[in-house]
Image: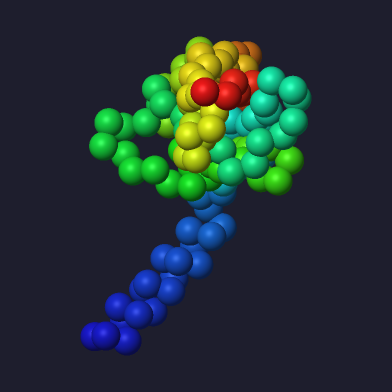
Length: 151
């Protein structure tokens, strides 16, 4: 009995490989980068002082797209600037298509004042899988450059 079930299972698996289970051309959207992970929200920028000098070690976080109780996760919803004052946050966008996000830069040493920017989101577009003639927003991109002032 077990052998018959095993043979049946193998036959079903092999037959499904040759039937209509494979995607049809043009049925699914052709996604840009991150295609296997879903749409992303990419927030990047620089942090400098008023003299134009890069500020490493500044904490940058994004709000307005996070759940209220979502913890800080480095490079997902917050980042720390590198040696040349640059940062990047890459997170799953979810279903919402925000037009702007809140990004905050905080100096943990307390030398510079905290700054909040309301930065616009721009999108790349992909073909809508249900309506081939329409395009829908996919990855969102935000550039938020901070110029921090000393306290």
